[in-house]
Image 1: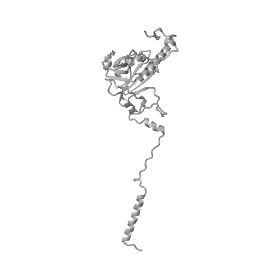
Image 2: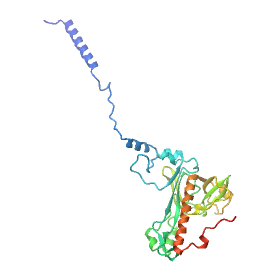
Image 3: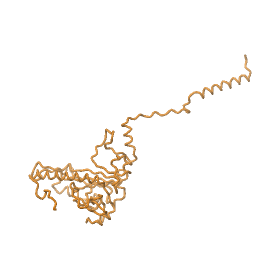
Image 4: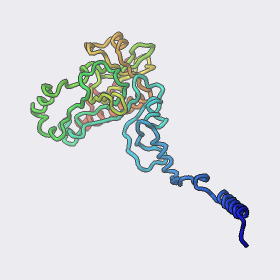
Length: 315
């Protein structure tokens, strides 16, 4: 049977309608997006991702659940802002730390120069120096007039074995002609550690100014990095009648003459308040160091000299 034109058009419309219905019924790639496959992290990997999720970097020392880490020989105190920027553990945060964003301390000693023969006893040996290494991270620009932007105290290394007994090593260290200033600050400019009570100094270590070991401007995330040292034993000095409420390191103006006074400490432009936890740790270790020295003295001479024997305080 031959279809009329009207029948043909009707048939075409019916066919198109069925095609459209089938098209709408089929799933569409654009209408039904498929979620991207996300990698499944192990619990340890998820934890590590949290430890690294900070804008400035991340603490690489031991953390709960971390199996690969850097062994940390420092004792830390940091501000909340520093901890947030570098993913430091919350237990490192201290509300007593003021004037610096972070401080790290550890006992250090010479590895290159160990001297034997104390008291003419060949078996009594000890490093040529022992000190507390105090590393400070300070807001950039607060330190008064550093003479250089970077500094590291020169060491001897193997030259300790032959140059220390001659003048060549000392002359090399003392020649500033081509290297610029030897220290970033005057020798008496970095001072402390002081114990404070009611705004006045009531205690200080047995040694005066701190030795400058290293300095870098804008290091480790836009902080100035200053390393100073305090000779081991100095913090074991007994407190007086007044126990300090706070402890601080100060940085004087370049014009400071090195003479201690309450006024000079009060007027210092930079005051860094250290947490008592750090000071208590250092004092405890210094007491142990003093006891070790006494043992070495007895080994060296057979008995402690009378001027080194502890005496009872006068009543």
